[in-house]
Amino acid sequence: MSRTAEYVAYGRMDQLHELQQPRSDARGELNFLLLSHVKELLFRAVTDDLGHARYALEQDDAAGACVALARAARTQRVLVACWESMNGMSVDEYAAFRHVLENASGVQSFAYRALEFAMGNRPPEQVAAVAVDGHESLRAELAKPSVYDAALRHLARQGFAIPVPCLEKPADRQHEPDVLVEDVWLEIYRDPGQHREAHRLAECLLEVAYQFSQWRAVHLLVVERMLGGKSGTGGSDGAAWLRAINEHRFFPELWTFRTRL
Ligand code: HEM
Image 1 (tube, rainbow, N blue to C red):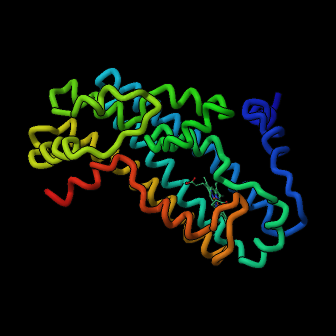
Image 2: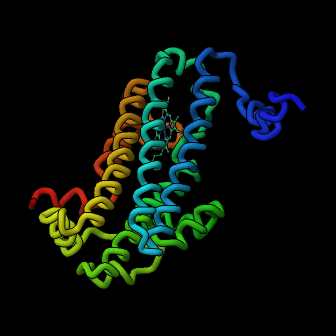
């Protein structure tokens, strides 16, 4: 078998290239579809690394968690960079094929939702929806603690005063901001030399949260560029809806403690 054939067989590249089937002849649609597939796969890559970080934290291996979080953040930067390619499309090119999407929207992406769940954004209405007819991967994700939950439990085992309700809540319930958790991050950042490992973990977590917010922020800009004030194919009012979501922060106390430092 030739080198090329092995490459094709190993990666099932012929099947991969079968997947991008534009529904129109519009020039921009193939790039849009290719980039959508790339992003879906990268969502999964980030979730996979977050899963490794969670496992390492459960073993109290903070250094191992940091390695996984650092790779997740690298992949997130690639996710942000993907918008650059999509921005090569002018608004008229997008308008020429938008109708073929019908009501398809990224909001329906189970890979993206699994990533949000792994990070800890688990609004009760979404958890309830998963129980009714959610994708298998989402049910599996909700049965596990988020990476932030795992980090707080790890810190508790290291002797930090994480409040008991944060440690004992059901896995599928999202963490609610707690001033006592803010106190713990404050303690760590007031004396990083004394808490080197916890400080490193906090920096790695924050970078992942930062990159996530950056992806959302650029998505919003792309949406304004492509839609102006139009509503979304998924039924939301478009940019306004995404602007509100942009206010959300993962690992909330890691952002808020800074005011007090
Ligand atoms: C022309 C490009 C794009 C436009 C105009 C656009 C527009 C929108 C809009 C308006 C929404 C809000 C929900 C709705 O009503 O549909 C949305 C949500 C979303 N989009 Fe996009 N989008 C674009 C590209 C992408 C791509 C390439 C991805 C990645 C595969 C993506 C992923 C998402 C996700 C995950 C959500 C849900 C966000 C959340 O639940 O917080 N979008 N998009």
